[in-house]
Image (cartoon, rainbow, N blue to C red; front, top):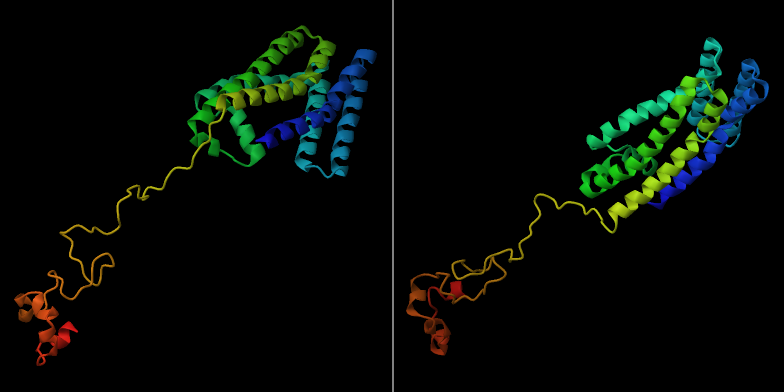
Length: 268
């Protein structure tokens, strides 16, 4: 599971690049108080991030997502003429996460488990283990707490129209999320402890330790059963009327040297 921590750290490093458009918009608007100039710099920074990820041959989907989000933010700010509208998509995202996280936890689909499943390729296999499911629920509570904290700070700033302060808090949004993910992962590891989910036994598994073939007295022994003696004088194997005279009839040396008995060929 160390791959999860490595993935979170990699995402944290990538976040520093992803927040360049928000940082550029906030800094420019704080210095010039001109919405058009701030939007121009934000679009330029978004295009720069897109080109940087293409040069590094990183997934195009993420680069397009960042560029598309900047375009939506700029369109909202240009339409309303308010700088605070630039941060509205992030605010809506925090609201959705604050509402959806508790519902998913109650339904047995903690958000942290879904994210780990995507990062490790495990998908939803972790739901088969009740211990891991509860541990992921505890880790998701850490993410939920960080999201609620961000929402509690940003919402009053948005309603009061403080664009610079709102942008300064929004810059640290991805960092808070990454930190919450790392702390939530530690909570998950502590909750799981040394537990290991064992694969269930197949339904037709034979757990008995008894022999495959009964060897009791009631079971007839013969040549077709390897555990029974294959002696021609066994009482369980009838050999005709001549066999009823007893075992001495076949083992007597006089009998073996006498005239041929009708059943002698059969016994041999």
